[in-house]
Image (cartoon, rainbow, N blue to C red):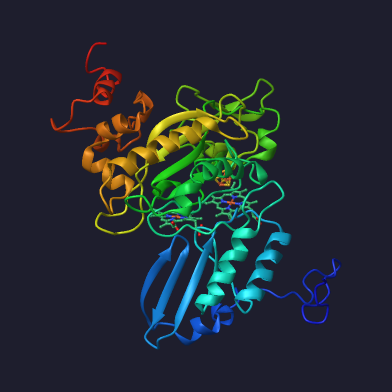
Length: 396
Ligand code: HEM
Ligand code: HEM
Ligand code: SF4
Ligand code: SF4
């Protein structure tokens, strides 16, 4: 395979602007629609989930389309993409699509085609034994985990994305293959609190977290960084300008004020903060983005810190399972995890999930006041006593 030298011009480093094509934008999606989708665009009447991972859409023209949704690792080789194309060529006239949660969807227009496709997909495995194209991710189950770069590509992570997602997905696999929960449960992951993706609005979210302030590289900071940017990057005003003994411009960090967000490092390479023992994982819960019944919600911190136990993150997996199982047992039909937690009260949420409440979970940032309880309405739970204790309200 080679790039066309005629169509796009040959790249000449001596004249980088010559024959340069720019601002072409993406290809129009219409070009890539299977014929049945083009013909029935805007005419769909209803849909059904035939079984986990299999959808059927029926058009007012009478046309039907069956969709097979498969899990994917998101991070994939060209070889794997070629295998996807090969499957699409064989069963789907060469058409295929990816979902907003990075699942793969193969579309066919007959039941016979559907059965052959399903059988083929389920038979494909990697040499290590993992399914290449597990079918599922529909309805009231757990679909793919939206996640980030981790140690594969980013320079600011506090944990890894792909390995944690694999470990958690392995444990939640039965929920990907089934639709047994009260409502869909969205899990997402981000390796630092830039929160690329959807951790701030997911039912369960895994977030990389630091616990030590940055180290200041006094020697190079004035050469590498725009110092006022680093100072302005800090959400808590912990950074101020300073001079070294030899008179070089630098910064000082009030470490008791720093809450290890890493924002100053994003702005300034001379302030690294990642740390083997300090870094780990925070779990959030109860966010959602749809407007169904209740408004969209932000997820809330429920586990302050778990260690980065590479490569299988047993502590993270165990805590996610505890939350999923308590939710599956306790919630009513259609209740998202956040709806359930709010109905029973967060003190009961902690009790039912078997999670410890610590002072780290009490909001102390600017608008924190509104998150405290300005009511006498609460349930007597061990978790509620823990809150009172950590807030200094009652004696041990
Ligand atoms: C210091 C700042 C950042 C750097 C250096 C950075 C770097 C990168 C790099 C190298 C990639 C991979 C690009 C590729 O594969 O071709 C990437 C992807 C991405 N970044 Fe960032 N990023 C930064 C901040 C952010 C922020 C703040 C967000 C979102 C709030 C974000 C969202 C994303 C997303 C969504 C992707 C694509 C992920 C995917 O689908 O594979 N990035 N970033
Ligand atoms: C209040 C603010 C925000 C809300 C309510 C929001 C909401 C959402 C929703 C609804 C999704 C889709 C989740 C899904 O498909 O299940 C999502 C995904 C995502 N959001 Fe946000 N978002 C917000 C802010 C941001 C910001 C500021 C960024 C980037 C700078 C961002 C980047 C992303 C990315 C990269 C995804 C994943 C998209 C994909 O995988 O296709 N979001 N967010
Ligand atoms: S969440 Fe943070 S560490 Fe992870 S990819 Fe985004 S910027 Fe990088
Ligand atoms: S890590 Fe965050 S809180 Fe700490 S000094 Fe840097 S910007 Fe401020």
